[in-house]
Length: 342
Image (cartoon, rainbow, N blue to C red):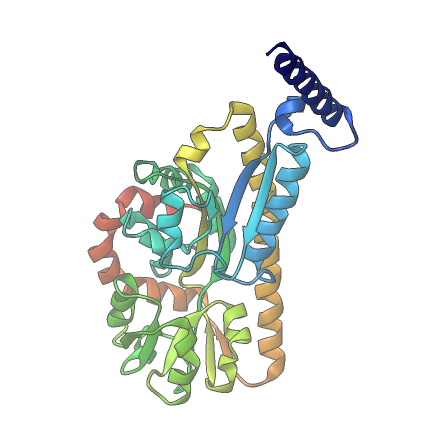
């Protein structure tokens, strides 16, 4: 029996020496062994290509946060619906399966009707006015309004202002729209907008618009310069009106459980990097839309008309029924703040 215990003792000593040797050897120690913490993984899911302003800004945020945090954060970017599509990403964020998404502002109307503000016609005087509103008191209030639903808005990432195209005639005044039919992204405000102009509307998916314009299912559409160019609408449209009447913009959202798990210092760094990425995205979106506008002008395929100040006043007057119907739903404070931002 004594011999058995001696054998066991020798075996245990040998095992202890082996473990010590493995801990002191050339293999990499675990984070527990070194006292280092594993990086905080941030999954950023979005539905567009990496080449777009949103896609590039997501990569810029990754670069900034990983660099400035000295490895505290690891950002994994999943573009082009690799993880979740338009319909799934909001629920994925609320479940904390991802920590960042950047949906179109109109996708948030079901949580807060005030996000319909981006669709309200002729509300913002310019891109700069929209940016000032987003960064101001009421734009930031909108971002915080989603916290009861488990989401926190961190930034507005603009895509650009919308302009009209059609295949029938120049659109210079409200009466020029009568009898035409336009594709819309969704119902609600946009349907009321065309109704106020005496035009019809039809909701169509983005990928169906070109064919619908080509075969005459609809006469026209509204979009950013970049979308008008890249979707080749000039091939199936004759006229474009530079109106800047509405907007297509994104909201960067995070999960509140994830956000509240961060230290104050980490939150501060997160916000700082998001601000830099936002400035980068806005500059890129502006440059891309301006370049597309130049390309559309140089193509010679479209007759282009830019609304005068007098024209714009006529459209603002024509849109009163839309404001009568939606101001209370959106919130008068938001409408007034946007109108007064110059």
